[in-house]
Image (cartoon, rainbow, N blue to C red):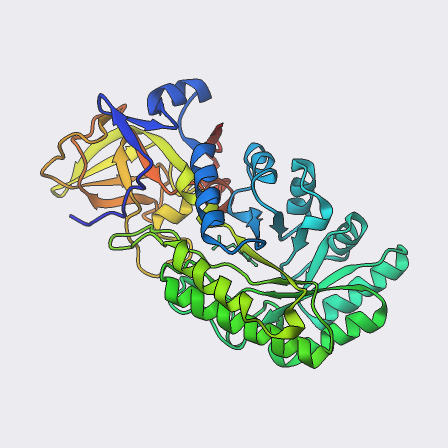
Amino acid sequence: MKPTGPIPDWFAEEDGMLLIGGCGALSLIDEAGDTPLFVYDMGIVRATVDRLRAAMPEGLDIHYAIKANPYAPLLGRMVGLVDGFDVASAGELDAALKAGMRADAISFAGPGKRDAELRAAIQAGVTINLESEGEAERALRIGAEIAARPRLAVRVNPDFDLKGSGMKMGGGAKPFGVDADRAAALARRVIASGAEWRGWHIFAGSQALNPGSLIEAQAQTLALAARLSEDVGASPPIINLGGGFGVAYFPGDMPLDPRPVGVALEEALENRPSILKNTHFAIELGRFLVAESGVYLTRVIDVKDSHGERFAVVDGGLHHQLAASGNFGTVVRRNYPIAVANRFGRPVSAEPVSVVGCLCTPLDRLGDKVVLPPIEVGDVIALFLAGAYGASASPAAFLGHDPARELLLD
Ligand SMILES: *Cc1c(COP(=O)(O)O)cnc(C)c1O
């Protein structure tokens, strides 16, 4: 038997049926037509954003990094909830604009932006977070060609990283941003070119659950931004402080409490160096805003035994929910929170069961030797924390099954 991550507190049951947004899981499947199905509960997203806003200093903008979940109906709701979107491709830029986000509240980061993507961003008037000197020169040339004034921020590869983070994005040699010791020179170049310099983007890492790590990274980010701004000799209009707020996916993980982070940030902002007095600040979060809202529902097709171990084979798998299989940014495979949706809260079986997907690869394991109520063919398995890096971050074409359905609850 192996432990599973904690099921988020939002989910209740009625007569043994998992409720999502107050609706029974099986009736949601009926509504959507079939399994496999992602259900996203906007009520949870709204409550999460509210809780975050209450914790963060007044005036701090909250941006949504839409790669976490770009499902169009969800993006449309996010427009009214957050202050800006962060995109990382022309496709995401298009999705952000179609959702109704204002161009001047969109920033575009990501290495390897093509000329056509830079052109689309400049034309739309979104802020480009420059990833290199070469990209800056291309953006300036394209701006001149189309007679538009590019809005350019400099993404800095910080000389520190986010401690305890699952995915390090700063510190040392990285494909992201410009090394801190060359960032001021690039900002000066942008200003001298006549483009609109929008400030700094400093993203130090992802998936931190320890408030202390986030507090330390934010303090270091502020100090670095102040130092660079002094070096440039100009006040940055905006500083994007990055994000990194994590989600409790695994056994032993404690959900992140954003309140101490907000208290420390408020104090740091109150005492910020004078060159940042008129600067506007933002954080950019993906998974923290949406992960808990999502449940992946997949039906049991077969139950079988092999060498004394029990397997439940489901109609979904890693082609929809790669992260739960342990193949998306984790070194050691651990179990996501999992349940039998139609036996939610029922007594568990003495024998562990491995929940495996329908793909013909041993990688396709959604629950490894987990303890669940006795499973029968036709039961529905629920995998939690499926609201971020699920459908859009999984190899949907692998093995030729249909994509998962998606359903948004308001
Ligand atoms: C992916 C990404 C995010 C979102 O990361 P989460 O871990 O989902 O919060 C934010 N900013 C940048 C620059 C990113 O690349």
